[in-house]
Amino acid sequence: MGHFGVFIPILALSIPIIAIVLGHKQKIQKDKIREMELQKELLELEVEKQNGMIKLLEAENKKLDKTIYE
Image (cartoon, rainbow, N blue to C red; front, side):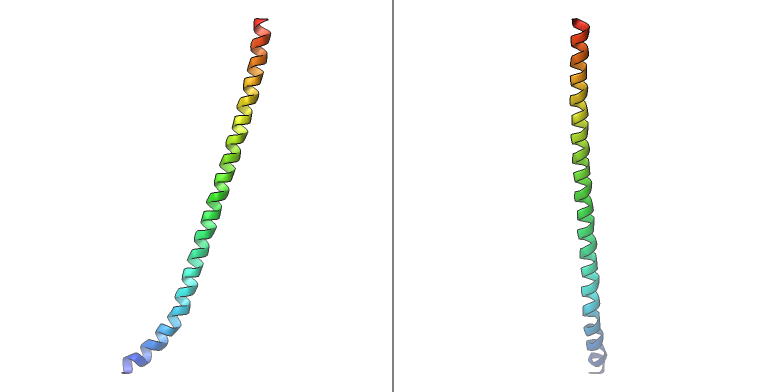
């Protein structure tokens, strides 16, 4: 019975510590997910920007073709 007298308080103290650690890990995971979402948004915007540049270059190319072939 002497062992249980020491074990129960240690168990009681470790539960909040485990909860804090798990909560912290969950927050870190959420932060990483948010960071990845933001990186994805940035990449999507970069793709849109590149598509816009392609359209501008195509329009410029058509103008030059028209000028050359007239």
